[in-house]
Image (cartoon, one colour):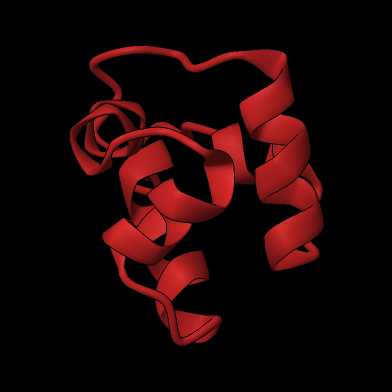
Length: 70
């Protein structure tokens, strides 16, 4: 199953970034970014716009949560 967590984790790894790097780029604390990545909080539209620009991946693809195959 593709989840927001897997999508963001894969994106920041491909970019050669850590969670801390991404958080600094967003101007938030690492814990706040982890909450977004783990789906504990949604994050603001501004954060998703920045993530889209940072990773060059449309935010709807980053946020997609697909159900498991049957």
